[in-house]
Length: 332
Image (cartoon, rainbow, N blue to C red; front, top):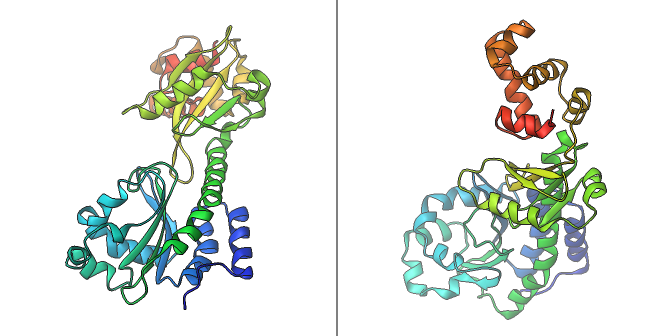
């Protein structure tokens, strides 16, 4: 008889996995096996979609399952069911006509061979499955096993809040890693919904823990832009912030706001704050004096191509895309 609960050892492993894992694959490796055992599942994995890639685990189960499923994904009737999920836990295979599903190519060529004809899906978060930023926990049984029931759904549902919190914590760590090269700057990192993931100590000293609504709204606006360019936002007094879209190490998009006090930076302070090399500092100095690329190259005795490379690296470190934005940033 199939259990509908986690025994003491399994519960301990799940709890530690939620607390200790710092990436999705490790998290999956810790929590998925106990759930598979408790539910008598034939297959289970965590799966996350990003704009440019997907990730999941545990490997190699997830890799093999996704490789088998990917050719059928666009035409899979279950994708339409998952696309209606904005949260919660559902037995998605119960929401389609069983005969029609079994006669579909995806059932015959993919689900049946890997024993996942019955599928229970938990959508972690509010992003619908299949869209960038969505994460699902899928647990499957073969056709030979009993159907999922309310006990199974309740067990998975009880762990969804803790799982969502663990994933959010991982994203927060990834967001910090994404801007670690500018850790001395006054920075705030937002997720796509405008929620604060992290604030540097300098940013807290400048603004306190209360983030201005103007920054939150700007982060949301930049997140939804089709081709986002850095966005400057005026705050109180002489303060302003330059926001740009970045990518965390998980592949998830984040918004990074770099605060500016409105006071001019000395060349030495700009070099220290943005970790410019000696050559980049010299190029920034020439840029601030109004020199063109050709004049910068001649003045410093370097080629124009080298000057362009230095400028590109300066822009990246400052989080800008043009010389005008760079000069605004350092306010020289």
